[in-house]
Image (tube, rainbow, N blue to C red; front, side):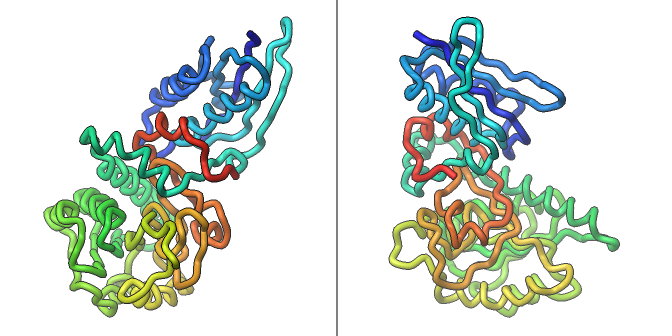
Length: 339
């Protein structure tokens, strides 16, 4: 049986991924599909390259295995060039190449991600806390970058737009973590039905919680001389997938409409979307109402297909993928798209 190897250029690790976690996860994904011969990470001319060597019946199967390895790796780190080679005698001949991280991104449906989460949730794993820790880390990094560019002291205030579901829970737990670090956190809820444990954690950490659907107070907290350094959009998440329309309505639409004008002003807040920008379809990328354009979208577990499709792709900003432990499950399914 011929020997093959897939080689990936490895960039920055995703938020929450330990340096020693990448190689075992990728090797395990390959070992489930084939006979694994070797795996390693080497630094060549300052660039980290991950190599997995395996056996396969033919080139077609080798390509499938190589894609599975790349899909697992991209949930844990930014990846660049991909090359799959076949051993012929003493030489390795290239059978396929990829060129940029964008060409290697796999977009999963909301249901695929929920199915991947299910066994972890059944086992009691704290997926929301993992997501929130990654979100807090990316937000803290964004605040730090903002402070470096500012000629004046940055007091680090964030406003969290909070909806009734798990998306709002992710945002609230992240807000609690940031409040513990000294960031001023203002919660702008659109519903009385917030995630109770996450809301309690935010309050214990010192977050200020505004009255429900108080658009004027939220706008005052985000705008002006004492305005926010960042806005976290935690209104709605992947529950938008498959609905007749993903558009925001009621208090959520009013809040986003009120905040949109301040994004055209100098020194405006950095907008960070939680999992997806609220108001887009997580599967199709459809948009038919107001959306708060993100500077950064922090997505959890996997790229959602809608983030990679227009018109939503133009509203996501930079996408940061946070590993929450779904790589093994996602390696067994065919993504909705690869871009």
